[in-house]
Image (cartoon, rainbow, N blue to C red; front, top):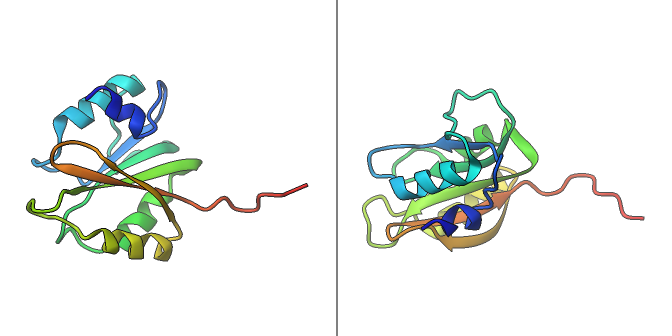
Length: 135
């Protein structure tokens, strides 16, 4: 599992915020991310500029658009939000279409999907590059 942090775009020094933690999260994913970044995961009260957000999200957790909008606030210009959801057949599974619909409403683009662990899948969301000038 050590390569999962790399798959999530975590490098040494990356500032990672974790949202939606609960008893069911995959601790091996959390450990791999902390080990690779070299620091502990920040919680929702963090005041830092965030490079990567790990959002553990389950069916019934509330309004995904609102949660994504809140997560964008402290996100660095080139920051990434990973929406981590239980895989098909597991309790709390979220349909991929729900994420695909919520992302643009929150001002994000879905760029890829990844298997994060045996029980969790991830959707990579980024803010569209604003005002890129072409010469």
